[in-house]
Length: 151
Image (cartoon, rainbow, N blue to C red; front, side, top):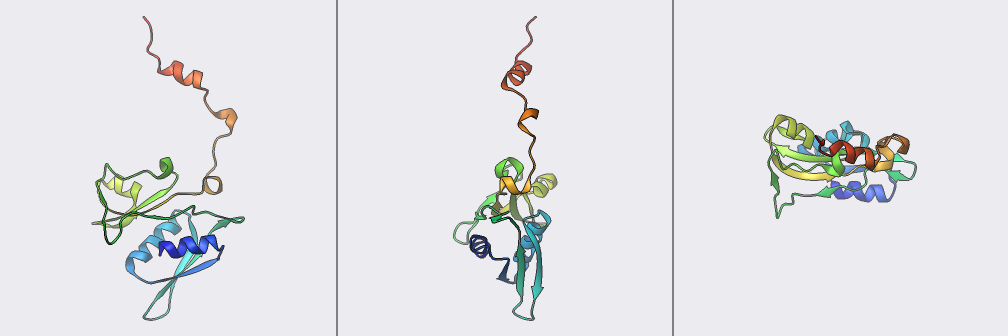
């Protein structure tokens, strides 16, 4: 599934078809909820297919790369305190837990760990707005606030 999405993004395809499974449906739901794809739908009888409409900003994909972490040959499990933050919170980590497939932030809030399925870093320019440079704090103001007060 992840490789099909990566290949479709590189080819700038609007829609990608993926064979159906429950875990793929849950991952597609997370990608939609987090704003990485427009929409997804299940089509057909058995075998079902998941059709996902990908999201682009101009000619650049919103998804900058899906990284498969846990593989069939080497499963990767993380505790609730070891769940990675993707790009300092700008991306999403997807976990399979005892309570279902969820994002890393949801798992941290529920204080549960699980199998780390994939990481989805966001395209920094496409999805998030940052403060203008004039609003940034200068190094001098940060270092003076951290310095211990002299008596």
